[in-house]
Length: 300
Figure 1 (cartoon, rainbow, N blue to C red):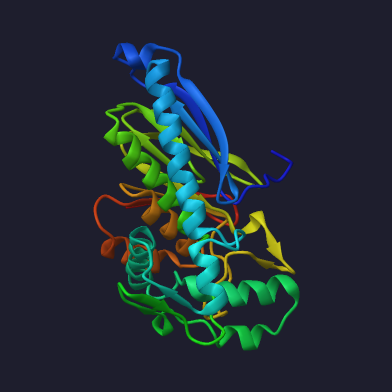
Figure 2 (figure 1 turned 45 degrees about the horizontal axis):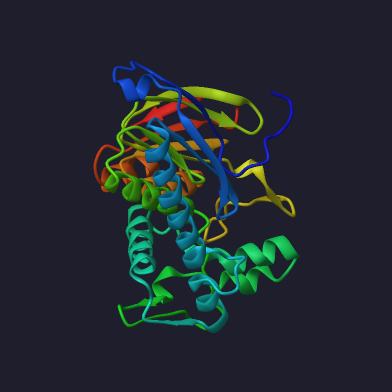
């Protein structure tokens, strides 16, 4: 594949199932396309049209809520208001839950996953003072209670390494409540209700390099080389002392949010560090890593 893919996430999906057995699964799927949190969104729904229509409406509602909570580009979102004022009173419950997942991933990765890199990202992308921005980084400086979230002076957060996965989980939970049994959700990351679905893992330079079968689980991918910030990769180590270690990282887990955060952080971690992080993460976590020279490693 000679042309570089442009999206930050690189998963190709075949909607054809593996081992289809039910009448709903044998029927042609209903599909929906949209856009959420800076990425394409897609549903592949194996259900009758009336039920699929209800699923699409529910998914759109969840994606709108995710935008209202986590978008960096909507000035009225909860995240934008927090970044602008450094203070968010009575944060919505989904926002608090995402913050707590960030703390969990920050701990599991020994600080590599850190949403406070937003000022550093701005400095890199705009040619600002990187050394000054680096002093603002530090998840430990963020104060979180049910009553309020407070940032240290000058801090700002980005949820770009976890929000798409969290939105995917939001949609899957909502559709599960409708009694749907076989849907593939793409809200920037991928999650399956039922299955199996065939998932191809792809790199922006080398194209598809591995394939997985996904059933009732989620998968996320990150590729540091998909976007450059004035000569550096767009996935930044909070301490500025580590360049990306892998061309593309895909992680599979029960939660799309945790898979999203792990794929982001693992790009910056050595193999031994990933092994230790996987041991600290819940459930059946796995990682597929494409080395910088094109070899594939699997872990977990």
